[in-house]
Length: 360
Image (cartoon, rainbow, N blue to C red; front, side):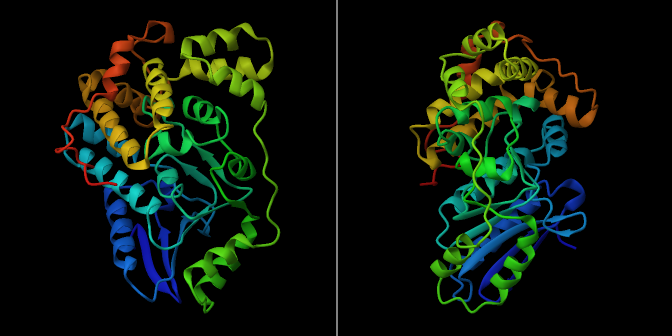
């Protein structure tokens, strides 16, 4: 069976990510199947709205999407496979298509929603989460950065929450995601199947009525703010990673100590890059942010020789050798060469040659 199940049921274009053993991690083929379905339904009068969910190990729901297929990234980088560049170009195009889609796109973000899973859900017109949602952008853990439009949507979180989430990879629950403005409604997971069934069997009059009906569900959970918000804003509003660590490490409270410990284990180079990414993206359109991120992801694999790439090393340690001991270069935030971090923001293409030049 296909890794993406695509069908029209009633007035709804239904998409089910169907790779449960890999937590629905996205492959290039899956990105293409999603894109083809959305393009086909753009002008299909029968389709009023699109609904997307993930297949869990026990059946539909329970898991949304754990991100891109990082083992493929590692293999393709080591083999200099052109499919790696194609993956990121086509994935970012898909992210843009979802954000700018002309019909309601309803994402049921149950279970794991990370990385590429955020890319295919943050642009949704209705983002549904549950008590089982585990949402994060944990890319600094593998020497990458929060891509798929992460600069755009994280920078629009309240206060300095975007910097905190992007740098630490902190996981959010469903109610926390609503408070962070990364979801619209938190519903008990037991409601998802009946909602999906009603969506696909009801004679909705128009697109707006589909959206309205989902958002009007009774029983929504109250948003839950991440704490300590004022302290978080204070620390993650500082000018540099070194300043943040100095402040955290001089404090004695549990949150500061824990946060400092997490940052000390992330790629020091990529922490510098991510801070700059999120701050630049605050003033950018989605299209400009995705173009910037396409430049950045090129540099992740090509700025240094493959054996010295932070991203290749981070994936090796987590998913290939699984020793969980990445050898970051340099291994301390205080030793990062700012000029090297700045090179991530220099495009390897002219504006006319950029692979995402036509996004608007």
